[in-house]
Length: 115
Image 1 (cartoon, one colour):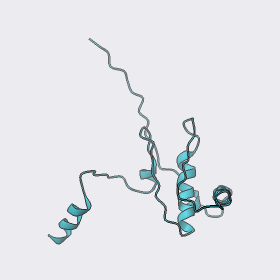
Image 2 (image 1 turned 30 degrees about the horizontal axis):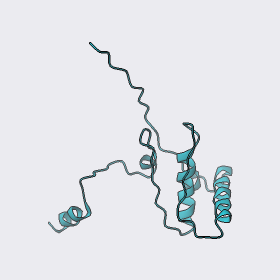
Image 3 (image 1 turned 60 degrees about the horizontal axis):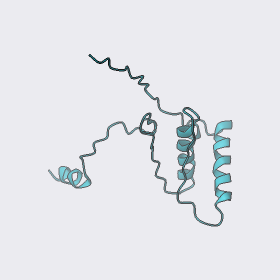
C-alpha cells in the first residue's frame, strides 16, 4: 500500500591520524599549530572542554578532533573524545572500538574474571 523510502546509508571509514602515522607531515604541523593557538587563547584558565563543530557534512570535524585529541594526549593531558555524530560516527572505528555492549557494566566485568 505504502512504498517505503529507500534510505541512503553510507558507511564511514576510519580517519587517518596523521599525527601518529606521519609525524613530520605538513598536516601534523598544522594540527600542532591549531593546538598551540587554542592553548594561547585559553591562557586565563585551564582548558577543560573543547567542541569541534561545523554546519556542513565532510568538513573534517572528526579528522581535526581526532588528531587534536592525539596531540593533547601526547602533551600529557587526559583526553576524552566523544563522537556525538549519531548519523555517521567515525571515532570508534579510528581508535579501534568496534564492539559496544551497553548492558555490560563494570560490576559484571569484574565478576566474570573471578569465575
